[in-house]
Length: 92
Image (cartoon, rainbow, N blue to C red; front, side, top):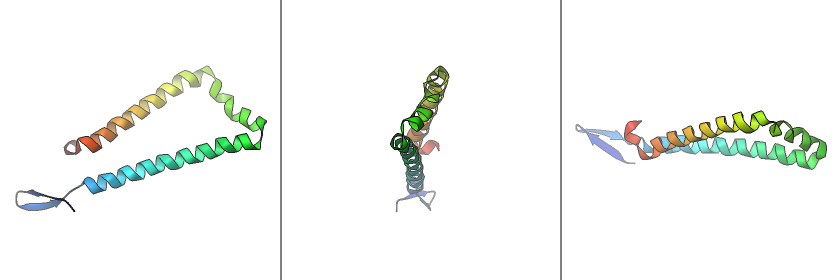
């Protein structure tokens, strides 16, 4: 394991812990994606009526403007935090 020497004291690196958190976060995102994907595919398999029930609310103009803008901002903030963790560890 890497260690840092500061004022004659050996301090373990925090990089492995940050990588563990990153791996946990990406695993959570993958798990959520898989659940949503299974629900959507299941709605196709179970019939046209269930697919329409899932599809209809997302075609409203409100969701096409407000929700996509909110999701886009959340995704950009997530990428911002990720870049801070990976490329600027001295700031965290």
